[in-house]
Length: 229
Image (cartoon, rainbow, N blue to C red; front, side):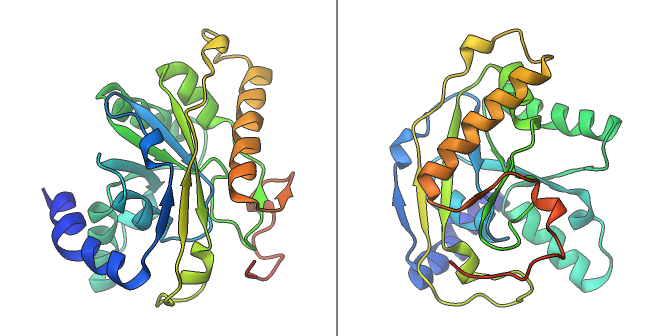
């Protein structure tokens, strides 16, 4: 109810009026059943703009630290994360990674939309980085469609390190669902998981037009200044 209220009554109409995002391919999101929406990740506001133009609610997996802050800022952050349909996950690895996988599979098992950023973190410089294979394992275990989504120019609206957005017009390109059913039963094969992930990242790169860098984004954090395309 809170999600619906924020999307349709409070934040949604205001954001649409101020930023006027353009959208291509919204019809490519299946109307029913569990679906993974896999997106590039340029800005924290990616998780805000995408839900505005989907008829179905969407849940994102977000690091648990966003839900554990104290004081007024911590409360505001928690409220924001819940309002945008985000679920806390522990990204420390090992059993935590397994728990994160199970959280996502639970969303898909209920026939809902799940949003994932295969790069694992925001791009530090508007380029696209190597995808992590967790998304491949999830799509193969769940047996659901995976829809590639390219966020365009959101890093210009909310650059890393800024607190207030700039009035820019971002875009969203939603591609056609990808079919990986040929790999059914092979979710334990690391070579298959890498192949699925790379195919997904290739499609995201094609849709977004970003420069691609074949390393993980986390290895670049702190090494390169943020830039706009």
